[in-house]
Image 1 (cartoon, rainbow, N blue to C red):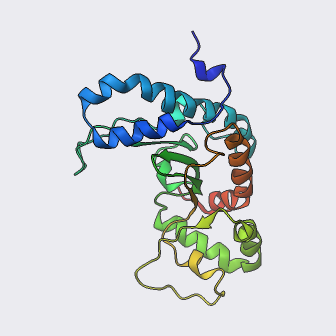
Image 2: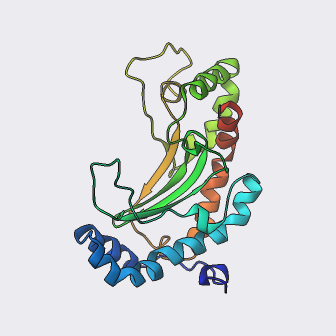
Length: 230
């Protein structure tokens, strides 16, 4: 029997979903979650899987190697507390990550979307790029600075997406100008957008909106894969 997300299009998240995160944050225990698990499935898990299913064909056009199965793409709400100081059993947020089927995917370019009580965010980048990848990234910029400027031009023009820099403690030598500088000095690359809950989040328009944003990031996505060491 197919799950509902496989035959029902995404129509938006709901205020009830945000309320679930609000309540979970204040009642983060197994007893409360067991009593409210149906709310999680109805208002968070199933809509997120429907969103992934609707985005899947477009993502496959951007990168045929990316995994788009909602059951493998959407995060689990259960927290692994074995190696964390935070021992709360559940995450008050949910996300998806469109990634290639590789070990160590956190060091590779990935499209993502996340929702929590007070905001949603989306973008593309590498959670923790390897030093070898970032060295090749800088070398490729040095080889053709104008090409890199062309790659990031759509992002510079965007009113939504911005580089979220993670600078080195010690500045690297760079004389390529103030536009390239923050990219050159980053230990990893992430281009993100943060938005408060709005009409887009609560409607089917979120699908087309995310498609537009992910397509805009495609030149940078390809550039990052061209230098990624896995």
